[in-house]
Length: 110
Image (cartoon, rainbow, N blue to C red; front, side):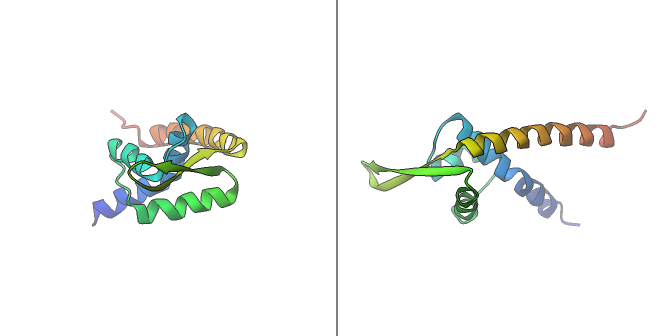
């Protein structure tokens, strides 16, 4: 039995929700998103994040802008669109329902 694989799959399942939640607070560039995820113990690498950001942009829930950087190439800052805010609200509701269902299902009996 590989518990680490199961844990990784559980984290992947909530990654999109976490990214959108981060971007609901402020626009951010990918390394900031990764740092915030790492603070929450969600280890993510650029190879996982960039395709997800592209998919979310193509869905219309994210947009981005370029900003010049003093310490290297221009940075791409992502932010939620109006559709993104609506989508995140639906994910919030779904998360609350799922959290409640898991609590009820996994509650230990005495």
